[in-house]
Image (cartoon, rainbow, N blue to C red; front, top):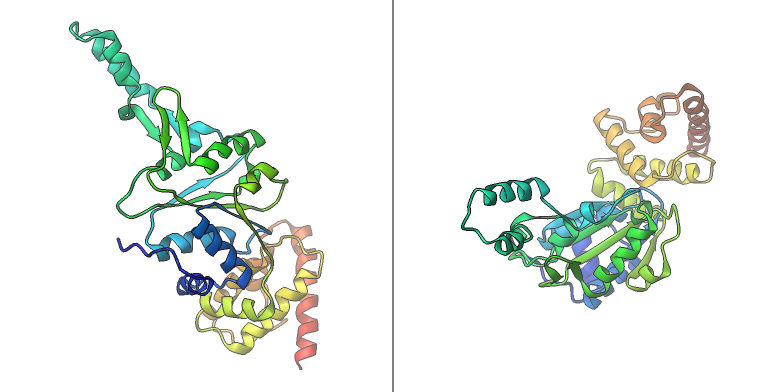
Length: 304
C-alpha cells in the first residue's frame, strides 16, 4: 500500500481532500493540517450530515493508511473499545494444562495472560506498528458515549498509551492520526477538548454546496444544482425535521440523475421528498411534505 506523507501546507492538505472528492473550507483544511503537524487528535463538531465522519474516511483512503473506526454509543466501555481477554480460549488452555502434569502453574498463569489471548479492539489496534504507516483512528460520535468513557480516553489521547494490568503499559509505535466527531448532543468535557485541535463544521455556503454536489453526483446539470442549493437553503430556514441537509441534497441529486430529471418540478417531487423526510408516519410526513411543496412552489415562482 502506498503511504502518502503528511501534507506540508494548508493548500496541500486541501488538495489531498479534494482529490478524495471532499470539499473543505479554509478553516477545516487549516485545522486538519495543524492536527497532522502537531500530532494531536482532531475534534470535529457540527450538525449531522455535514461531513465529519466522511473526512476521516477520505483521509485514510487518500493517505493510504489503515482505517480503524470506533462507533460510540451509550454504555461503551474498554472491552469494546480497547481490549478484552478471550475467556473461552483461556479456560480451554487451563483445562489442557490440568492434564499436563509437568506444566508449572506459574507458567500457565503467565501464558493465559499473554498477548496470545488478548482480543484487540480499535483503540489498541491503532497503537500497533504497521508497515502501511500510522492508521487513521476514527472515533465517531463521541458525544453518544458516557462521560466515564470520555474520561478514559484522556490517557490515550495525551500519551497514546494504554495500561493493561496483566501486561503493563502498551505505547504507540507511531502516533495514529485520530479524528473524533460529535453531533453535540451533549457538551464534550474541556479536558478532552484541550487535547485536540478543535473545529466546528458548519453548513456549506452556496458555492461550496454546489461544488459538493458536482463532486458527489457527477452528471448533474448546473441549473439543477443551483435549484437544489436554493431548496436546501430554504429548508434550513424552516422548522423542518432533521438537519442532515448536505447528505440529503447529495441523495436527492443522485435520485434526479437516475430518474433523468433536468428540472425540479413542484408537481413531481415524491422521490426527492422521500430522500429528505425519511419518515413513513402519515401525520409527520404529510406536514413535512406540505412544507417542502411550499418551498418548491416558491422556488418555481421565483425562477419563472
